[in-house]
Image (cartoon, rainbow, N blue to C red; front, side, top):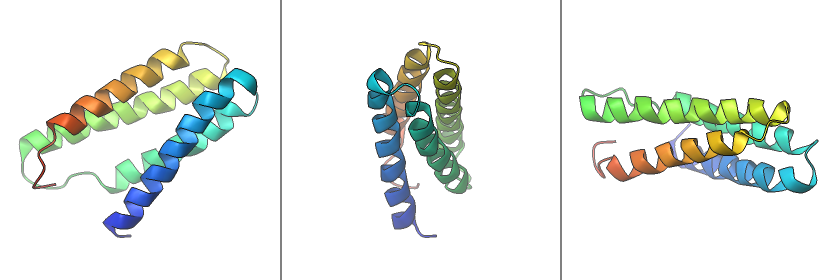
Length: 109
């Protein structure tokens, strides 16, 4: 797959995650499934687009980003068991993603 396809998949996954988080308030029984579909797609995209270059800084940032992705998985699990801590896991994961994206260099990725 090319980079454009991964970007489209990531946008679709983000839409599923946001939809699952919003649906949780009204439809707590189906929201974890919607959320988990998005998390599975993001996990796939992140695993396929890991940095394989020599720059240690970029490798470190991608590893941190993968930890944030694992927090998405943990948030999905917390949604399944009906724990409200999924909100905290989602917020931390989104914060990690924001920090990494801001620290990532524009070229070389």
